[in-house]
Length: 93
Image (cartoon, rainbow, N blue to C red):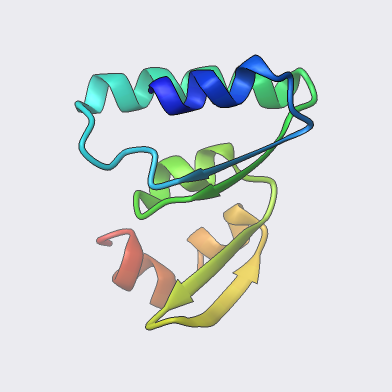
């Protein structure tokens, strides 16, 4: 959380975040994603690398899905969520 705050102190145009949810309590993760959504609405460009696909898609305008170190697919989050292979492998459905 401190790293994100430090990154925002310089009023960046782009914020790159890797594994935001790693090691944080779920309620803290939800609060951080809510704040990131607010920053996005205010015009900040955010690149998120995240294993929690539900949260990543909720924040994304466009998504890349990487599997075994290779680009598996890409597209709009809503379209990706409807793909059967994405639903099975990443969304637990």
